[in-house]
Image (tube, rainbow, N blue to C red; front, side, top):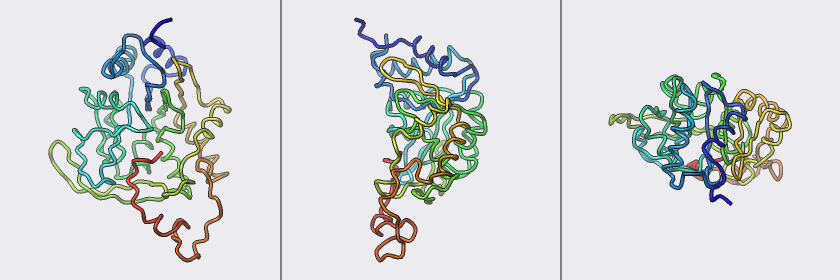
Length: 295
């Protein structure tokens, strides 16, 4: 038996089978560990090189590839340095060494979002990631532009629910378990600091605001919108962002709690000790959410 579970060629073939083509705009969410061991890739740096060079550049010239490099700097009351603040990694892309390798690769552009920054390469990167309004998920955000440009969401080794594009749909639908919150702070870009405020669509700090882990993906697969291809020990999943948006909007219109855990009971804002905004206890509603556990 080989000591590896897949090869770089298996990965490239998986992308092609899932519908990724030359010139596509792809936002990837990577948990490479779940795929198993890649042949001739024994270190995080080698795996990162396989993704960035062998897959993205050598196979598909002109491939447009944005990746999440989130820092949550403003909610943590930290300065965000566009060029130097490292990504936290997390459920959206748990393979942090890949994100750091990609972020620091020559030619990669990073957005100046101090909470949900995105790094990208390719001919569409500048239009996607620069001159942004100060909103993480709202109108004309990276995620809105990504949708308008016909981008495809690709999750590698993680479920579709981990793709942060969902929060853009939720903000457009004004779901009952999230609300807009302003975070002020300093952004440093090429050594020049500037004071800014950014709007982040945070979740209420209650268990029922956590996302359901599989409902959206089940719907997307059943409708033939999400293509899944086995690679190694897990899957590559690909869905067009416009299909994702339309399906999720349809379900949220039918049931505003479609992607949440649903309330245990109907909140009564008139009850003493509860927040009028959320119907939750005041101390819960006021608790600071740094977003780092957000899904």
